[in-house]
Length: 254
Ligand SMILES: NC(=O)c1ccc[n+]([C@@H]2O[C@H](COP(=O)([O-])OP(=O)(O)OC[C@H]3O[C@@H](n4cnc5c(N)ncnc54)[C@H](O)[C@@H]3O)[C@@H](O)[C@H]2O)c1
Image (cartoon, rainbow, N blue to C red; front, side, top):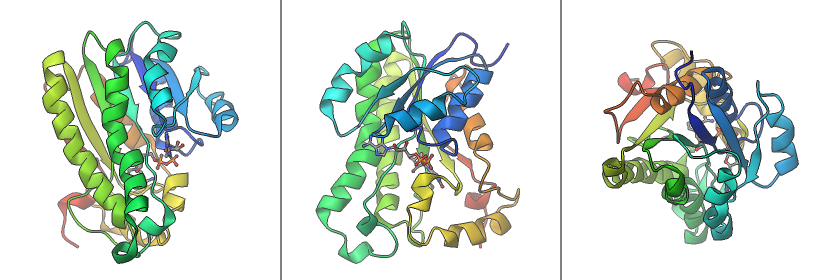
């Protein structure tokens, strides 16, 4: 018996098999969950990647900037699952001008895009799925520690600070319905999103040596396991929390 036996889980943000969402879907299935995926844009690619999971799951289209997609999401998920016990928000995007050291010159339009996709969508996704979560459940998002200003992360860092706050407000408002809302703050991982950050190599060089436990930039499994633990019944009284899966970097001075 896995820790997600009988649970119905929606996992967003799968793009490649290096996506954190892919690892979460894999570990969730290994732990007994029924999984539905969402993908953005390149659906045929996501469908191909989904076939690499232990049980190839259905793939639904979701652009979090498209209100039509959000409004129809519960019905479309409902065609495959009779409810949801968990949702994983593994979505982030910032235009190039919002990253890489251009902080003082980024336009509001580009900041707005980053915040819409990376922050506001946590709320939009949660609300879109509420009709399927009548028995309570667990919502987990992917964070990058926003308690300090990092090199090159720039407006994505601001968007993540917003995500951390958004998670606390969602925890406040959804707690009475038995829905827990938590974040996993992962260390740097070599995914498509990370590769699109100019200067990401700065993190790659320093993180493994700064982490008391060490850190493997190519291993998404520790992050996925933390997400699955938070989706399970083993954190029944935890909400509004940020679990760091970063080798311990957040806890030590440089
Ligand atoms: N890779 C890292 O170093 C790292 C570290 C900490 C947190 N995270 C976070 O993990 C999450 C997943 O990113 P990843 O690293 O697995 O990269 P990824 O590129 O594999 O995943 C990002 C996903 O966001 C999706 N997306 C972008 N715009 C979208 C939109 N408008 N609507 C719906 N989906 C959209 C992409 O299709 C993709 O599936 C992100 O929130 C990211 O910020 C990543």
